[in-house]
Image 1 (cartoon, rainbow, N blue to C red):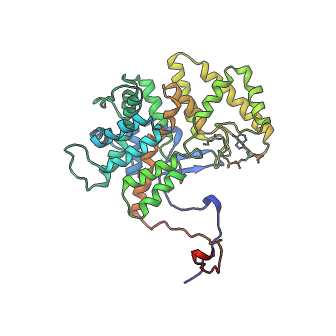
Image 2: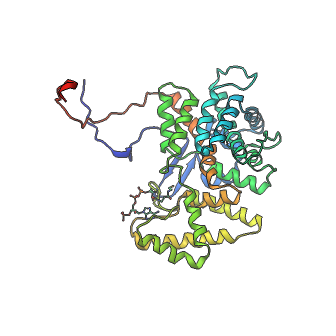
Image 3: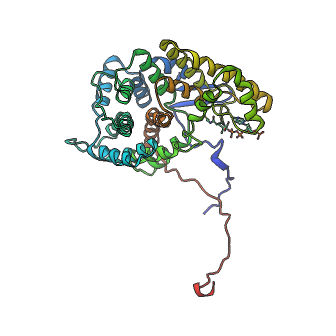
Length: 383
Ligand code: COA
């Protein structure tokens, strides 16, 4: 057997582990392409259903295809009884929303009342995408002593999520804001959760298992688990005049400014651009631009101070900064930020699973043994 000659790369940084037609991330040019479209173009124009169709079929749907696809997605919104029972149990313990989403996603291998067994992975995929918003919204309402709402039959996926959370049919502006967010974060190269999903599906395991694993990866603070602090920072600053002394103090103390810097992007994250424009539209339509203007001021000051304190590092605004602002404008608590990210990203995870299944090779890297050698067994009585 041949000895491996590959070197250990911590964090697999710069290691290419997949080919994908789903998204391309250019960190130098600050460009994100999703299934051939610049994120700026797709995010602000597509409905979420169009984006899902695009990622899963590699083509935009015709009107007829879109209507059929929207209908088959909406047909699977309802939760199996076992999922609702799990949500009620989690409510009694006040489990974090991400933990509950992970547990509830695992119950989706069970069928809803009267539902026939599925031999079609596309149907399982639709069930996962359709039910994530129902799970998060139902749990959120239960946590706050309210009854979960059944999905509204005339609303699309994004509008329904807002409806099921907040109990009223959202305006066109709010729906557009939600769709823009979900489209923007639908896929982003071989990030940790996407890689996790691909590893699991490469063993010929099932889609639900792959998605539950991906949720576990997304939850960590180094991935999707820390979007709240950027917003806390803006609130703590409170008014534009405080921005510079506050941020300077943080940098003097060696702290990191949340919402800035990125492993791949060395220029402004293109998603920050899209989400900042979406937040601006939303706050303008609500008639209160105060927080938006403050955030812009904080951003400009932060970027200037980062250049002063960390010259040559190219620390720019990342996706989290305006995610926080947009989701806050839509009425979301910070506890819902990461679960809402999952509601969009589950579509990308599934698309990667389909890609992996189409040309599957078990993902099985090597490790380099650095442990002890030549040990001899010592019986328990002699140790
Ligand atoms: N604020 C202040 N300094 C920062 C910084 C930030 N947000 N991000 C990076 N730096 C500094 C580091 O302290 C380090 O400085 P040093 O060389 O003087 O020690 C240098 O920039 C490089 O940092 P490093 O951690 O090697 O970069 P990375 O590529 O591994 O980090 C992040 C990427 C995202 C982890 C990092 O930028 C960060 O922690 N940002 C804040 C958290 C955040 O917004 N996360 C969401 C990401 S989408």
